[in-house]
Length: 386
Image 1 (cartoon, rainbow, N blue to C red):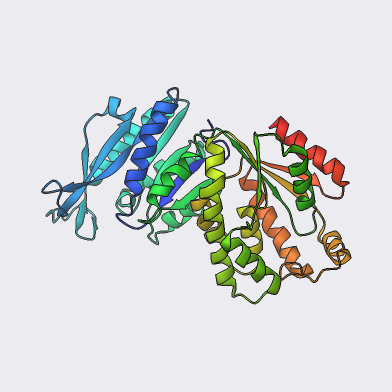
Image 2 (image 1 turned 90 degrees about the vertical axis):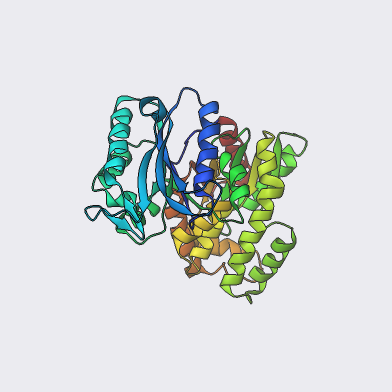
């Protein structure tokens, strides 16, 4: 079990009615039962309908959850349609009952300041909540105190929403109608993970593939270990390898193949292996995609969201640290034609992207100038130590 080991929070974004609140409720129920020593505080924003089961939504209520219910067991109206209160702010056709939100925030602020081993669950950080002048200072205090949180966040262009979506050391995933059932299983592995996921990363020529193959040979009879690599040998992976070799695919199509190959890999091997308690060791994973595709001009944050929505975060990234000039020399000595990713100026950008990315993970750096046998021993030592 690893409740917030390396990230300080989980943010879930998505379009209205995509299932964000349902997902939050699911995690709140499971985590409360699994981590009885942790106190969960917060609220869910529930739709209110004039007739139960109909789509005639008339407003939203703040519903206390977890320990908050013990302090304040009742729901509070957050917004109502067509209220004739000119003194209150509006979001679309809804009048926001700011005083009720601020009452809830006061309760949460008091409880969070008094307790340790707490997690804040907030549904949501959105346009209605931002109508209260007390909401931003409240959430700022949560961030300052490093209180772990699970929250949904709106897609609006308010500066504070943009800031929250760009927080570092936070896992941000996007729920859709198509992926919301899958996200239950995928995101639950961020909190409940019987196995371990170790990833070997580095620029081309760093030696990680050589080490990975040696580890496969050495540990092939140990049933606790599962070895794999990306791109895979699946249908998408084979097409992707051909695209990387020939360099004749548009970059958008290459990225699409990376994501499709990874999703298939996650569903067929990575998630089942982690749930069975296996130790999975990968030669490349989504940090490679972000570092390399980022060098192709894609936005770093968008790549991170796209990949971490579908891919469990690694427990440990082992980074083979190698100067670019040495990597280029090694690649030339192989006698093979350079792939589209093996040009010196691009490797410099890729290495820079890794430096930006690695602080998001538990990382062990290895000096890739060492002999292969030494690197193998260091990888095994780090895996056993971890």
